[in-house]
Length: 281
Image 1 (tube, rainbow, N blue to C red):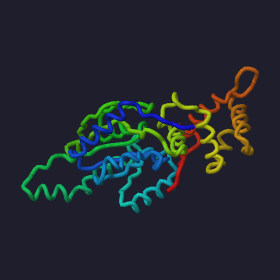
Image 2: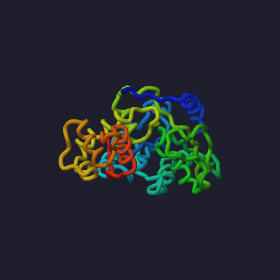
Image 3: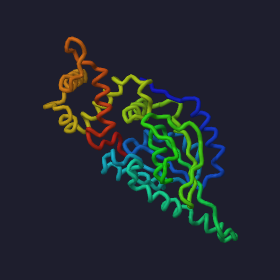
Image 4: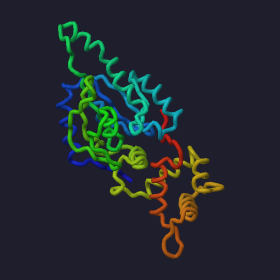
């Protein structure tokens, strides 16, 4: 299954992003803590070039805590500061401005040395793929409801400057996915976590990927959630077992695989299977 999703506004956003970069002091790269590499847009490195950057591992409350610590160490080895945050609850959000000010203190010290007594607020750019939580984070940073939020990817359609107290101004941007996923597994991880609109997907294919991953990495949680004594090796038998136990049935008592797929993905996205990380450094 090849997953592609590149609406016209995303191509426009890429162009506008490159034009705005000269105004920016620091970039906040927002990633999904459950899939840090798969939720990294490879175009971003090319676009941002050498701009100072802080990696924000959002939805850390939904990710495997030990694996998130491994990712923070991994990014440190890449000379990138990474912070684990939960923009929904606000956990870790206050440290973002502190980290940005520390990163830019030399730049603003030079401005002060040139006689600029009241430096302007630092200007930050926030980038990330759709549905990674940018609008929620902006609202949390600004302390009020400014950015439009939603549980569907692609809510933000235009750029806007947002004040964060007196110290920082944020440039919000629409989420940008790359035009084509060269690695099919990247697309499946993004689909599993909800970064791509379900309406363009074959949810059974996505659920097959998710169930195979859970079987390998979190088998006990899979057994507990769906009351399974053993996990069948055959994926169709696993669908049947879950469908019968959870009442995902069609006419004549046969298992409705579409309903099973929707159930499994909903359970993953609402943490019914606990905190999950779908990739390790």
